[in-house]
Length: 335
Ligand SMILES: NC(=O)c1ccc[n+]([C@@H]2O[C@H](COP(=O)([O-])OP(=O)(O)OC[C@H]3O[C@@H](n4cnc5c(N)ncnc54)[C@H](OP(=O)(O)O)[C@@H]3O)[C@@H](O)[C@H]2O)c1
Image (cartoon, rainbow, N blue to C red; front, side, top):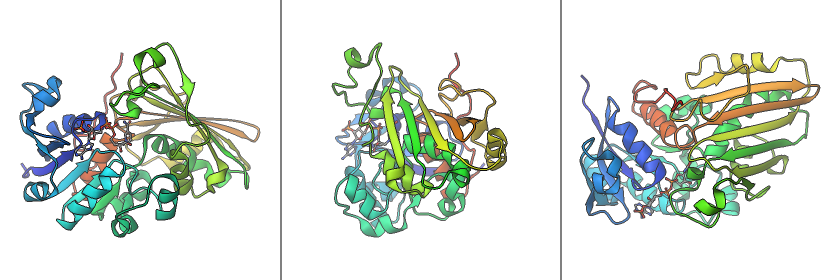
């Protein structure tokens, strides 16, 4: 048996943090050796009672030097802006990093136009965007991976195979839905049970920060991407409906099947996809249909897994030279 690799999870108290810990506990090569929150001073079972008698460890107050003493790689499940402070410190200590926040996903000027001034431009310049279907080879050689956003993951995987057929200058229309865990564990008026239960609504229509990320990776102008996210009264899951005006003669399902023929975590379906069939897994399920020059693509992922934590573990596997599938969940929470 190969030696275990000690890794860190910083931001372990949040939704993506606990998903990382769960996967790392069952991973054949990684051990969650350093687990941290903003305050620390407790044990894992106090932080996540669901893990009592499953895995025991102390929870620390996050500290980059302490991570470097124990771990080769760290997962950061932190809010943007907080993340870049830790990335800088961890990279100075030589620790490989997978950052789940938006801090290293965009070009500097795009990031600063939509978020805050960037305080770690040197690392930003060489961070690799962690979508294996696009950048597998680069991820394998990276020290810093920017894990993609959940909406961009679902949308880019759905739209990418068809961008060569897109009518010149036409719009990329994205109507997407997310479960409430997409907003993180902190409650707000929008995510309050009373607001979201038996309800659904658009938020930040045509102004959400994931639109520039989608545009950058699809290599289209930001103004062409018309992105409207919605909140659904479900805990996890994400559905992205993409509309493209297309040209040329092609069969959409054949395009998808050819494009993703060798991809282990993209499944092409011959009927519209559902969120439930991918919940609890790293799969992105895709379906497409065309009528005349209008193409519809439907993409489903689990926002917490393919949209965040399991995609991060795939990236860690690639960075450490491990089999891509090691420790990656594939069995959905059905029923
Ligand atoms: N939720 C999703 O579906 C999703 C998908 C893709 C990407 N992301 C991104 O992933 C990141 C984490 O998201 P999330 O949904 O897991 O958020 P979350 O549930 O709000 O958790 C964030 C965690 O960060 C911790 N934290 C804040 N400052 C810290 C510090 N200085 N040191 C240590 N821990 C600190 C908080 O811990 P304390 O409680 O200890 O303060 C909190 O538990 C975000 O950048 C988010 O945009 C989320």
